[in-house]
Length: 393
Ligand code: TGC
Ligand code: FAD
Picture (cartoon, rainbow, N blue to C red):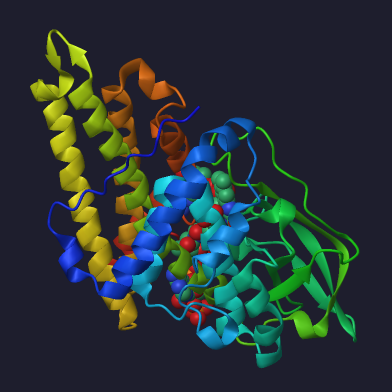
């Protein structure tokens, strides 16, 4: 049984002063929903490795599906900082919950909005915003993870439809998704996006079991065995790897904020526990080594908050570069993982139990540091940006 959610958000540099009233309302609405609907059930969901389906309606109601998609298509029409704050609060609850919203917003709604035609936008976006339809994003393949440009999934033009073959692996939301935005190569070897719908013959989504991480998020494969995809389901607005990578820019940006949420939860729990736990006749918060851990945690959280706020401003002005987003994703996820490990130590043996959120965050972050570009891939993107030399070649 999980303990009451007494989370108090750290704001050491008074960053609330930089937020608008709308930002604060959006953040607080998400936080309230997470406390009420997520915290009481998340531990059990993770233990059972189940995604609580009732979260879908709640996420839609708070505007977490397509926060920055215009209202005419069912989105919330918010800015990028609001999007980030929603991701922060969701991941404070659980990275798997944030994953579900990230995928739906940045990896399914974003490509349909950015690369789809009007008919596709009208058909899919409103239903995705309400959660009536859930989506997933197929880029990674069994043999092509960090190097998606080498993908084998392909489609042929057969006159009145495309014939799609191949397989995708490690796909969040796949087991229950109604649609999949799938990236494959056309006969000229160019990457294009297709919207594949559940029920199309030859399309299956086997679930991946046995994960020790992101257990409240459903993960699966996408298998395409001569799937006939109607011609109207191709995304006409983009060709090449820049299509899926543009979606990743949006999702990675959201993860940068999300990781702060997980870190804040670990810090908050460790701070409270260290003041309550007595050893050698005094609270362990009184020992210098515990204070070092807590002081370093709040310093790193504050730096990450500043990084994200600035990145959000740049994103609102359409000035954020992919390399700047890589820096924030890499720094903030690593920061959160280190904080989760230190917080686990402060909780002693209690830190390994589900009574505290620490171990769950720590295990989740082991996926977050790998997906959406691994820690090292993002380092190499920064390296390429500052040196002008491509280490991938
Ligand atoms: P490269 O030759 O550098 O680039 C190919 C084309 O793409 C353009 N480009 C970008 N465009 C937009 N945004 C970006 N971030 C871009 N990065 C590159 C580039 O300009 C070029 O355009 P053009 O017009 O010249 O063709 O590509 P490369 O093959 O050398 O690969 C580069 C690399 C390694 C950085 C990239 O492929 C990469 O980022 N790999 C990591 C793969 C990854 O992140 N996969 C994520 C899968 S989705 C996921 O994990 C979801 S988890 C969801 C959840 O649950 O939250
Ligand atoms: P690999 O690419 O095989 O990398 C293995 C190691 O080699 C890493 O440490 C990597 O950094 C290193 N490496 C690779 N290339 C280089 C290089 N050039 N230089 C130095 N080191 C290198 N994908 C989707 O498309 N959609 C999803 O919804 C999705 N959800 C996911 C959910 C979960 C829970 C997980 C774990 C993954 C998900 N992924 C998804 C896949 C994810 O994006 C990939 O796992 C990730 O891109 C890394 O690919 P890989 O696992 O094949 O590792």
